[in-house]
Amino acid sequence: MKKASTARRGRHASAWKSVVLNREQQFSLKRGALLREAGRAFSLRGYHNTSLEDVAKTLDVTKAALYYYVTNKQEILFECHMMSLDFGDEAMKYSEEHGKTGLEKILLLIDKYVKTITSEMGSFAVLGEYDALESQNKAIIGKRRDKFDRGFRKLISEGIADGTVRAVDPKLTVFFFMGSINWMTRWFTTEGPLTGEQVARQLVDLVEGALRSR
Amino acid sequence: MKKASTARRGRHASAWKSVVLNREQQFSLKRGALLREAGRAFSLRGYHNTSLEDVAKTLDVTKAALYYYVTNKQEILFECHMMSLDFGDEAMKYSEEHGKTGLEKILLLIDKYVKTITSEMGSFAVLGEYDALESQNKAIIGKRRDKFDRGFRKLISEGIADGTVRAVDPKLTVFFFMGSINWMTRWFTTEGPLTGEQVARQLVDLVEGALRSR
DNA sequence: CCAGAAATTGACTTCGAGGCAATAATTTTG
DNA sequence: CAAAATTATTGCCTCGAAGTCAATTTCTGG
Figure 1 (tube, rainbow over the protein chains, first blue to last red):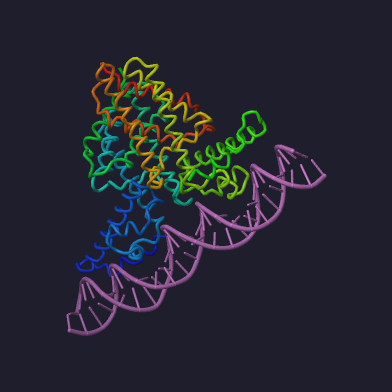
Figure 2: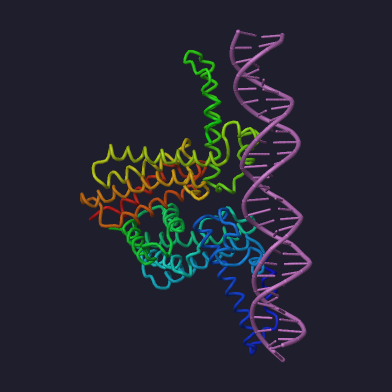
């Protein structure tokens, strides 16, 4: 599946040939742009509602050109999912390193994650479209997603244990919060009136209210 | 678009011919089952990930048979959207009639709405899949959806005005709450371990925590 | 400025799924 | 029970979009 792309790079990767390196850089730069643009479209309009023609058009190339960078449409979706999950894991790591209490970690996690997926770089987070994955990819993504969810639940349990979070059902609570976040891809755009910071601040505020014990 | 179906019913609709009425009833019963089943599948797996073959199979008929009850796939989606919105409007009406304060109304709205869409009857709420609507239908649904959102925001403003809700951004808050609710279609099933009541209770609890002024 | 590699294109094939017309099966009614 | 209306089915057609490939253009190093 990803053979095509990796095989095409790599040839004479001698470090001193800056020109060749430029080629490689160009390749992954363009590939990145493709994934970003496609992912943005997928997030906003849905996987099946977005044809590769559409994506190609916004990138000012033909559909066929895309296939030089990617083996098929499914690969694009898969990689987008992986990146989204990378963002999640990073946010999780950050929150665990910088938060003291359970509540603090939860709020940091949400803040970081929302800011990431709303930033120019990350605005292509494909958080729905799970069912458009073919079964093998679905298994991989599903596993990672579960892991993230369990981590999130653990933060909540931690908060309940240390007294910073009131008694709530961790599983349901995570579902609801993730719903709020995942739904963002349906309405948030970087061109809209609100910045990612504003959005993150409001959500963190609501979550804190919802969870803080008193 | 809906000509076919409405035209086919209605003939000799004389009230005293109970047999004919049974026919009509059968028709709309079956049609209802079709919409419900299709909607459930759309909600769970997505519109484009659900073929009418699939739907037909679970109903033990052939794909073509469905076309007796419905003009095309798009009509199914449209009707499901309309029903979801009906549920929303009903919940809204209920909350406005039975709630005193802004906060009370909000909690009643959410409670009622969640209970409805999780109930056997309403488990087919198609809340995503907006973009799969063709433009004309999209306009109609979009208008109704906006109206609902504005109503919801108004409840929040009302709550802020009467002092039961703390200062939050009504628009963003509605987006987040609707995200939590809409995302439910992705994980909730009536066969799962949780009842609609439990889910509704937890969400209402969280929302109350998030909004109540103190 | 040339050779060869990289990138892009246009034209083509394939395929899944929606949709339809004719037909068969079933049920109702006289 | 036969005729008529209703319901379901079979098989076919179409269409949109994914994906392929030989041919061509664009780059890049020498």
